[in-house]
Image (cartoon, rainbow, N blue to C red; front, side, top):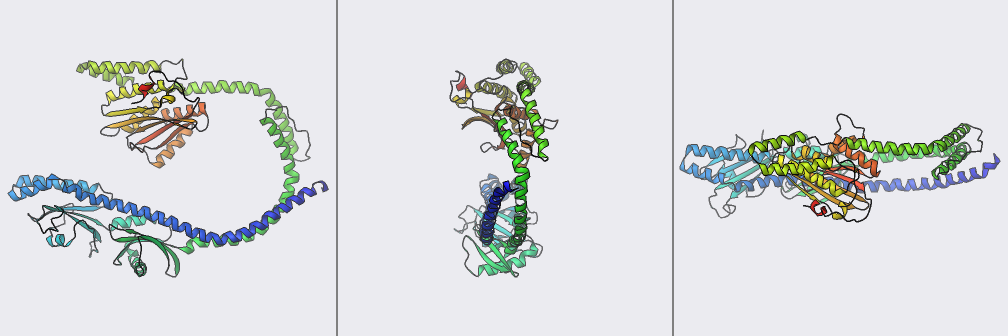
Length: 587
């Protein structure tokens, strides 16, 4: 026992050297943590509040643009002319047409809203709300292009209203306008956004106007919000800021941001006790457990050293020898405890490993090659029947030029697909194969447009065979083809450090972040009936051949709006001389 006493004394001294500064530092940091948290609350609340402000302003701007769109609609002028000529059927046609456009324009917004068109000369009003009537007085009293708040009465909820005159200066010049457009939305739209904003978060948020009117996430919160707003408005408020205020006997932290389009403030407040209480409680528990843990640490340090650290050191020494390739290492020292069993098993393992390592290494190489060929064999063309049907249809129609182009690309496509002797072609060959596939599909799907942009140096890189075409196929079938109208596929090559990247983007509907995360998890699992073969196959082949860091990445396409699939693999050489067809891989 005396042999190890000096080491035990050193470990004990180190423990006390760690414990005492930790106790002092914790006391200091526990005091400062409250200040740090208050600052974090400030930044977090202001960031979230500005995000909410931008969302509300985005919806308001969208509604404001509705009137601008309607002012350029010739149907309004045609309707006014027919009202004056009293052509009943033509008037009914234009009136129905205008009402349908108002409803479509109203539905284009995320908010519930009502759109109206006043025709002063014929004293008529066309609105998405059947209960609206022509009110010349309200129209003339409202300033043009400015949102005005109506507090609402009885069953009518508070709402914001804006009038736009056509011509725009007719109100200022006391002229009779051709039409006046009204956009209106209720405060309930803002209430819903406030409710979503504070969901699962402490405190409350409300909208405060410059006149002291306040609207919370629910109408039941309006009274308390008005009282808080009244106290805030006693002092001048800037564009944005924060204050500390006592509300209901609790200290609260208030953040606010100004909405210039509505002439109102977004206000958010959080009780500080909700955030500070866990820190105070954890500090008390820390001091109590600190002493107990310090005593236990001293006892455990000696036991671990005597009965664990020494045997483990020998095992680690043996493992390090294995890492260096020395499989003849054996543990000779006895421990006189349970680690003797581990010592015996370690020595037996080392002896068996030394005999088997060469055979296992060779078998792994054979298995890896077989796995790669098995994965690659899963990729095969599956649209030959559709291509032949297309050629048959063109033959009936006498479109010989289309048949010639189709057969040309189809022949190149299958010539490359069935040529299996070269399992490591250049990237330019894979790009040419993808181009043939896109040309074939463009004939069948006439609304398909595509482009390929690959750096010449990248085209000389050797790649796995048939790893690009399945990704292009997936972008067409799941991205472009289900969407109406024209679609675009863009293939772009990028060299990023020691990696090559091929980005396949489509203009389809794309996927949500949750869907992308779920699909990426499926790509790492064994393939089943629900998992798509193409992308899973390509992902496994890239990982098998190029190791960690390679594979498939998914995200939203910033240019086309659909999905972007990125193929990433490690570069094998710098530069290169692609063949004369390399320039054709860029369009």
